Image (tube, rainbow, N blue to C red; front, side):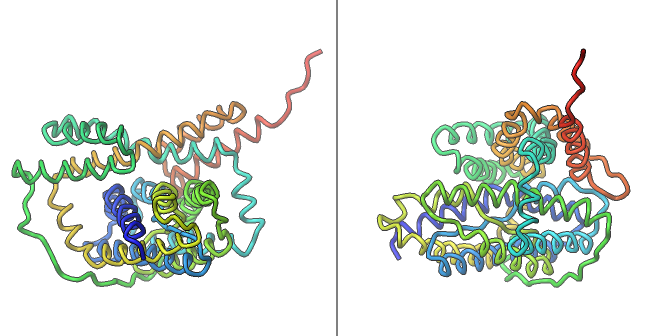
Length: 384
């Protein structure tokens, strides 16, 4: 195990955890998770990523890196009126569909048949409200938020993957230096998994579970497989979907949302600087597994540290973390000219946050976007 392999895994895990943990906490708060359930959620999703990455890397002898679904966490955080057991039921459904996609190829083809512009617009509609809240946070707490933004913009020019992590570090330093936060409540107790019996509410399954599956497949798994191909590795598509879906299903019973293929953090683990011998780069999956196990074990202390920060800091951090995915989603939504109007409809409905018959806005955005796209496919009669 070369030092370069360990350092790549450490950086990738740290970036993945630090840049979006605030979004996971926002998702847990949106579904009414208790502090013990939130801690169980973080522990379960960390262990799911660790076990899945290590197993798939050893099994296929290629570097396979899993991540939690960032768009999925944003989707969960945007929901209202859902209990934690109902959310767990939606998580189980999404995980089951991911595993089923590995066995039933027509299901995967159906997901792939959704126009890229419409799928990207649904994701953009989920992400946009969170990014808009960043300006409000800066107005309320400018002495903390504006320096965080400045650090983010500066580091982004040098290393985009580290920009959010650097902003988090700046926020922590400033919050404690100015007395806005303190370590009086820091907890070093080990995390305890909490079993949560799922409730399968039809409206929640359709409004949250199905969109969670779709955004995870379209916005995480497919780009993750493309990242592996770009680095010259054949992605184990069937095994990856089966393993990540199965592990997500088990982790869901302890509060965790889905895990999937990573893209940005995966690129950190696959370059020539990781290991000169391509056939040995799969070992980064083992190092990655070890780092995520440690993050899961020490997650209570990390969560306590983040909870001590002013809420505006976490709001701004979420907004900064989602700017990159939002740029990609908007570009994907409006690049195809033929689906541009359908994408606008999808974005507008999804971003509205409307809930009808218990079904969330993301699903309605997809439905209306596909409806408009279908109407556009009907050829207009030629004028005489």
